[in-house]
Image (cartoon, rainbow, N blue to C red):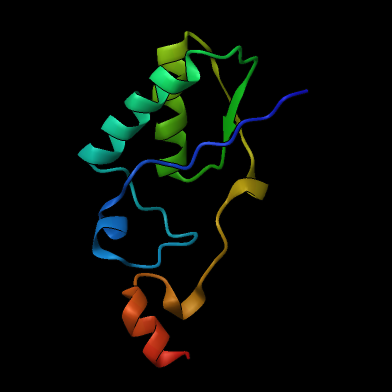
Length: 101
């Protein structure tokens, strides 16, 4: 079995340098374009399934890729959710490093 992993496309919090962890932040326009671009790279391979975490940014990225490859989007797995940064969620990375060195 061969596995491939694709990171979700960009979100507004990525753009702002915020820790998003398990916060459900959606893709922005750039993130949607990145997911569409991934189809070009992944289209050179043979894929049997596409799954993702249940977070909307991951599901939307996976759906764009699945549509582009002509595949059904498979299940969402909680085990694929990013770690939870607790009080750090939504905090700009530089500020988080000052608060919690």
